[in-house]
Image (cartoon, rainbow, N blue to C red; front, side):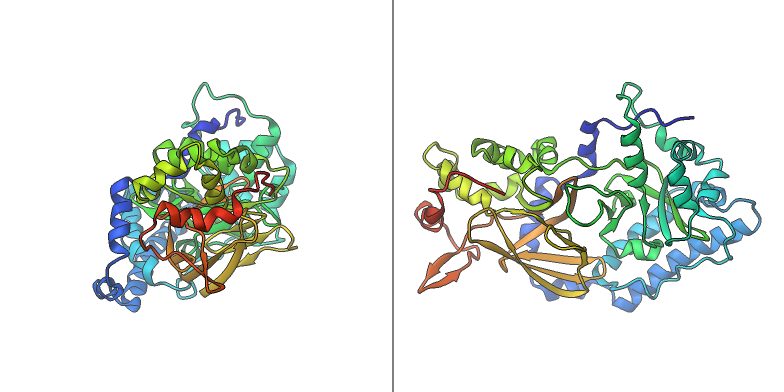
Length: 454
């Protein structure tokens, strides 16, 4: 059976889910609390690691026992997941939330097969009763069959089970063969990501390469939330660590669709970005961002509607007036970085020949913005799944890694205000009271340049 449909573009809005306004309010409140008071409530690192190891081991050990008595490991894994229902997912969620605060590597997790595998990834899915539709789609591309049978790398396959294909709307437009192949490549990583590594990783490189994101491959995001462990926020991982001779398979309950461009994602989410979209449209920046012929990859630090609401009403009124429009343009330029794509755990630069992983600990980078001569000072503090990103030592990235076809969206909880010079020294805004006059002073040197180039 051929894969004849993919999800329409509009459904991709579900792939980037933001908290409601009250969550942003809570983020603002929590940021003012003592760090010590939060840490006092958390278990120790050893306690969390032990709990997570026990949970993962119990699932994997049970899968291993079932697999011993069964002909097919993938079928056994999915059968077992169905039997335990949401229990495994709940365990991953429960430990994962705590683990995100503490675990700094997957080295201590037991991510190896309990029994020596004797089939490749392709052989596993092609003989499974749960992945007949995926296999049929892959069989249309002999080079993909060779890839998943090959030993050039230890691959990871996020394998949608047959019921995932049933979620495709019946009236969805038929994709081209090229689009189908891109979608299939987006389910494969050329790197080895067993469950323990997925748990402490925010983004995963895939086998899909695109010329709009930079030197590196298109990436997936991994998330822990109310649905448990998911990929791209919506596709739940329902079976873990089905090992083959050339990698590992994780079963997922929804198809993964390559993401749209940054501008399209912003348009899809008016409940979160309507103010930003209005500003980008009024200033002519939206088509500039959307035109990938003049830049390769990029990062937009996107203020949510709530971030704009935190500005004094007089400033908001001024910026969106006809007189303030040129100042609004300069302000928004300060949020856009072209040709450099900064994920929470990886960095692509257009002029570089290779991608860089962001190391554990503190990583600092200055990112040049569209505001001529002005850069954002970004600090990434990474400790396992716990990642904190600060811009100009004040503004926090509230939601990381909105994966896009032409870069990444990092949602910020404040509008980022450019620095001003005091005694020849630049002073960054740190949340102090801001007036229209002060904002104009900070932006005045940049408002005359009406032609923006990426």
